[in-house]
Length: 221
Image (tube, rainbow, N blue to C red; front, side, top):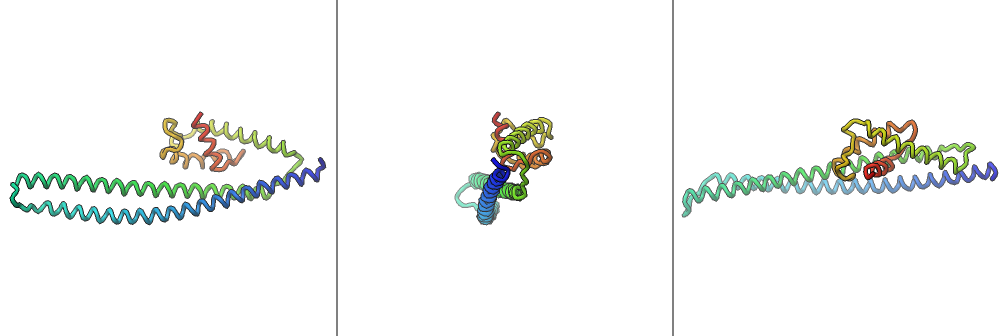
């Protein structure tokens, strides 16, 4: 194959890779926009639930206050006090349940915001890769040589990740007694992935998606 034909082929491959990355970025942006819309809807719904819960708390507090004003009818004072204690205990338990529900809603909103932030980081990273592909300069290497080099670099990066994980600060260590997608491990990955990207930047630049995939593979092994 002539040098001109080879360069044309490599340029065409670069064009296809570039177009694929643009499509991925467009899809990620669409997903990110949808996640932001969903987040706003959840936030609005949660605020409505919280306001409703506050009204219920005020209502229960008022009932509790009324029980403090003893009204004696045909029942004895002991019966009335017993009823008041039961009702007051029930009101307190209801308030605890409402507070737990409020905390749960806030945790869900925080998790949604973390997912949105992670998606934005991935979009920025892919956009940077897309820009680099646009500036790709081909030398005398063949397509097979380039793919072989990429495979070697990727394998090297994965091996280096394993080494880094063994020596990294305990706060960045995944919990292997829990599932990879557990809330605790998701929180740890948000800290771990940026650290791995910094450590690998001189040799390889994996995306958040690639690192997540590799970490999942290591977690299963």
